[in-house]
Image: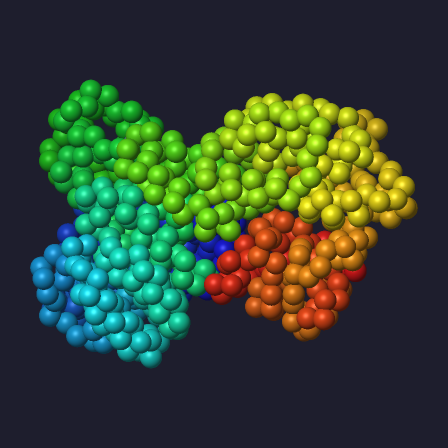
Length: 564
Ligand code: GUN
Ligand code: ZN
């Protein structure tokens, strides 16, 4: 149902299949209130939405809406043919103190009106509640989730993580919901934190949940609708957002931007290229009648939100999301608070760091710094060093290798066995590098560009160079050398015998067949596929973090390059 297409740390681009089409994540589901639509659903679609969320509690409490939804379906009711999520009334209980609905009845109602993704009636734990109250409410939410699962039918079920502001309870809640047969995991109870701009705490709570959430299901951040938060929330591993903010801000005369919020009344110019702003002026917008102005501001708010999401997704694809969050933090000090909170999580975040990214990092950050220090520690460095702005002293031989290449400075160095050794040592450790280069070394370079292509040792093709990243890929002969030199579990992904059969024929390995994994490996590392008796069957590139496999990820694990 949910397939992760691209990842960068905790962030991912995914595809969530629903009965009414696919959601490409991360994305925003704008809230439509069936009793008061600021914009028509067609207008919302034209602003870039591919899915919506509406409130089943409001529908169920309104006789005419309820009967129409039951007779014609909720899609017809809100005139929407795409993916449609419903919420349950939990938010109303937060606002009004109570709701008049039974937890199981609202799940059945969402199923019966044809919702694609229905939500349990979770208990909204307020930030001020102490750990004791948060814990008993968490138990009630979990009981409601377990009672909802048998009722969901064809509907995807959103099972919310609560736990208040207590990280250990968030982690426990995440572990409990992951154990149920539900499909989407919202982080709930965080609207007050967002309203109070407590982003540092918010980041800590999301990460606490992510420590135990099964990564094969999408994570929804309830009530996150400000474009300035999308980059940060995606960096923390959230996939879906929903909010009525675009309409609420518009009703209040406020315009949202990726860098903050402004009152239209206080603006002389519109610093925005959206379809609304490029066709009018601040003065013209200010002069519109109230209802027309509200609609134009709502359109602007949505257009800006979807433009930001496109930018976030491109940043994930390019490995530049952290840089985008840093840019957003420049406009919103609260986003910077969250980045500070992440420093304390460096040890765990390091496990999610990819071995290299499509683009070079242009900002320092704790998880990446830790990763690099750890790799350099295993490498045997010699010769001259240069001073990298984020990583400190780096061996000259590694100056064209990702992610150690200094920003903006690409130099051509000649290829020598020493340079090959330095890179192999950085990637595989010094013992493996010694063994890989022991013998008669031949460096095959391109006649036109002088770039290294292949490393042949004693007539065996052991390594190829990926010129773009300055890193080696392992060939079968190289894998055999590492296998013979480095003891298990180093560099290894242990697969079930059923998988080994296929991997031996050059086919890829999937997470569900992985029995064990070297925890020192990172996503994008070269790895050896072995059987339980440590028989080498193939070599390839790891496409997930070992921690992700341990948490229950599905899909591709190792892209096999060569069978052995
Ligand atoms: N909308 C905003 N916050 C919440 C929450 O915690 N639970 C549910 N179900 N909906 C919400
Ligand atoms: Zn605009």
